[in-house]
Image (cartoon, rainbow, N blue to C red; front, side, top):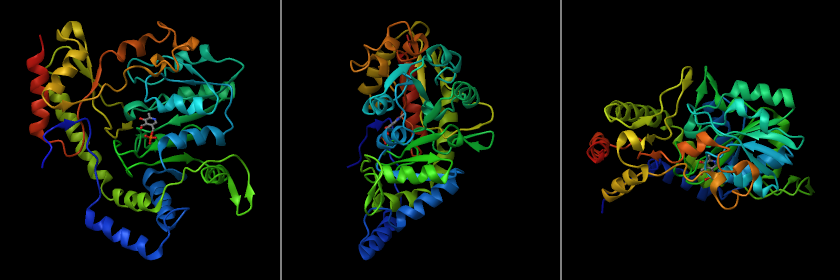
Length: 372
Ligand SMILES: Cc1ncc(COP(=O)(O)O)c(C=O)c1O
């Protein structure tokens, strides 16, 4: 039975016949995990597709983030954004690191480089920015600060699959970047993730750490974890590479239609493309100005739900507002004014390659009619 609900996303899956062929090969060679042939091929093809040097596959993005911090031996305090999915800060917490929240830039919604320096203390060892919604951070400004203060930069690039800045992958900035291939992402392997790095020695250390710390059959070099991607996911991911270009092109078309139709609705704003950036159109956030629109964000959110349209309030509340983190000095009310304002306005509208024009027009007409 066809589900009439329109959700915030719908996963793109490879053709079943092709995946069945891959499964037959896996059943024949009986290698299911531990750097098998599909895993090796996927790492190579992914690096070539993304235009990066080294890819280390993971079972999910959260374990990739946690492991990246271990690999770089990050300790003390790390500067990060409150406007992200909670896993960004959880990864710090799991490493015993104190998160220090810094406000976001009102245009990109990413960590504001102008506000980073004031948050650096003798305990700061790294910056962990997020390319939120796939919009690149101000990577040059962050690099300059990191170089000046001797800090590492680990990008949470969970949203930034296949995003380029001036013709170069955004994943090439910083010491490492982390991807998520969760079912909700632009590129999915059901669950999955990766660390991107620039040198072979680091890639080796990452590979040890995601396999319990084993450097050889009898040598364990660190308290590693089990975060390996299995062969079924790797085979599935390889097939996804065949269609990802078309998927991103479809997302761009949908994004342009949304923008055109929303231009007419007073009180609703949205993100524009950035100069020099090849976007991946990962999300379609809108921002409700309650005064101009005449209704609050939450009222519109409920109205959409009533019509079986399930957007999501990414990212509300802020990570710094969750009880786990709201006692931190940097989480104090008023310390993050831009993020505190944006989080009250945002709804991510349904957005995926197979979203039809009829569905888009239905969503927009509900937004238009509901306006006071
Ligand atoms: C910004 C961000 N970081 C980290 C993650 C965690 O990735 P995963 O779900 O693959 O563990 C996600 C999404 O799930 C995310 O959106």
